[in-house]
Length: 314
Image 1 (cartoon, rainbow, N blue to C red):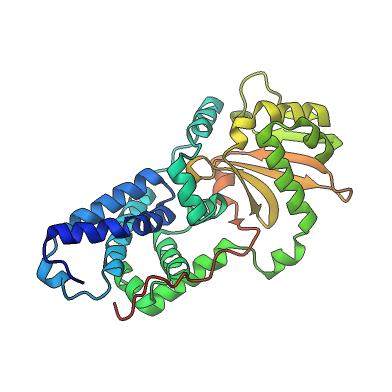
Image 2: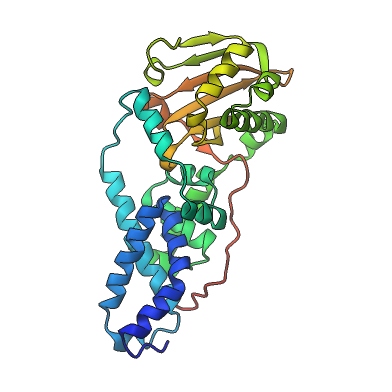
C-alpha cells in the first residue's frame, strides 16, 4: 500500500467503504449500527502509525478486521443487555411500522443477505456469527478470524461449523419438509402483506382456526377465531405487522416469524392439511416460547465464499 499521509489513507478507506458497510451490516443487521462500526473503524485506522501501515500488502483485509472487531464489540454489548419483552400490541405495531427498511438498507440486503438469514444470525453467539459471516461470506481465513476472536484457528473453524449447523435444517428435517407446505406458507405471507383477501381465501380451509396469545392483540380481539373469511379479513387488517415477517423453519416446520429489526418477536405456526389448505394458525409471542424455538432457514444458506478480497497471509 502507498499511504504517504492521512489523506491517502482516507481515500483508500473511502474506496473500501461499501465493502466495509456490507461486512458490518451482515454482522449487525442494522444500517445505523453498521455505520457506527465503520466510523469507529476509520477513527482507529486514522490513529495508526502510517509507517507501519505502509508495510501492509492487503489494506482491505486490515480495514475489514478493524471493522469486524468494532462489530464484535457491539454484538457482545447486545448480549449483555437484558432483552425486554413487548409491553403490549401497540408496541408491536410501533416496531413493525418503524422497521420498514430504508433505501440504503434495501440495497445492503439485496447485496448481502436475506432478511430471513438476519433473523437466524441474530440467534447465534457473537463469536459464531463473526466466524460464519467472515469465513463463509467474505472468505476470511480462520487464522485471521481466530486472532480477532482470541481463539485458535481450529476453534474459529468449529465456531463457523456450529453456526452453519444452526442456520439450516439437518437431514432429518429436510426429509420431513414438504415443498408444498413451504410454498403455501410463503404465499400466505405474501397475501397477508398485500392485504389480498381473495388469495387468502384460496389458501385457508373453510373452517380454519386462528389462535393467538392474549398479549399480542388489542382488547376486543378474540384469542380464537374460526372461518376463512374472518381470518382473511383479520390478516388484511394486520398487514402492517406482516411487512416484517419472514418464512423460516420453526422447530423443523415452515412458519412465519415477525421480526422487526431482524429480532424475532412473534411466531406464526402454520398447520397445513393433506388437502394443501391452512387449517390452523397459532400465533405465539411469549418470551419462553421464543427462546426455546429452533429457527432455521428453509433453504441452504450462502456457504460459497466470495473470495474477492484476498487475505493471503494477513
